[in-house]
Length: 355
Ligand SMILES: Cc1ncc(C[n+]2csc(CCOP(=O)(O)OP(=O)(O)O)c2C)c(N)n1
Ligand SMILES: [Mg+2]
Image (tube, rainbow, N blue to C red; front, side, top):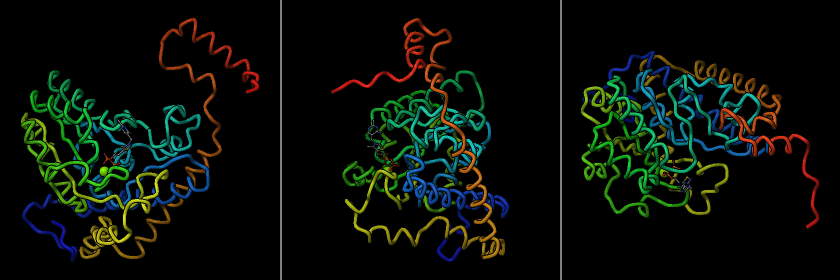
């Protein structure tokens, strides 16, 4: 849809106003900057881990934008930009990156495993595929309760090889649950390229076997992503059931800060994707519309940087969660053996034993 010169092909134009595109663009830029800063923090040893979305911003943020406030999104682990767009406070996200006392998951999870009920955002699970069955179950419940809402679930190309993909797609197909399956085909599952992931021509066609329509879209084209996701969400609300979307994009960075992609992929593989950078494409569109220029870009970058620095400062100076919180949130009444363990833990560290 979005041509190289920044103009739009009219055929499937989702008719976004300039203000809407500006809002999404700002979110994409903020996400890119935060990604870069978080990698630096990890390299400095200040946070333990980050898993980013470099190059996948149009797919992630465009699809989230297409869903309504009352809908629910079930994330994989690369979609913090979409969570921020939906109202996850930046401070809460950064608190989670540090696992401090203000982290809603109390430092029990890895960084990038936040949650936000107010944003209608499920919690992040590391085991791939987990969120697919959750999203379908949630959508099915909404259908039974006759609630007018849709769910959207994010997952990667590699996750289509999980049991959960099959379970979720099958249930969604049979029970026509209002669920959008959003597959970010970013070319890789850590070091496994898509050619080794499946013998199917596309991931979208995997829907056929489940009776779920599949659509393949240029995931680096913001307008196409918004248009396709909106149509899938409309199908949900019209009672027409699920859609599988394959967003063709590219993981421009490593899998996470624990990964070095130079070990398994040629540097020149990334080059063509730099030219298709989803952020650059939207910027060209906005510049052509007279809605963006270098000064506005600089002001945005400065504002994002400032907000990020303040959030990091506060998060880093916030203490770790109290040790006693380890025993919270599982049982309403703590069973005796856990009460005993809690007491033992709080009485001080066990005396080191000789090996
Ligand atoms: C059940 C399970 N098996 C293996 C892993 C290790 N693992 C983490 S991410 C990942 C690759 C996922 O690739 P993909 O679904 O394409 O998502 P992407 O990371 O590319 O966004 C693997 C194998 C895991 N987290 N859970
Ligand atoms: Mg992948």
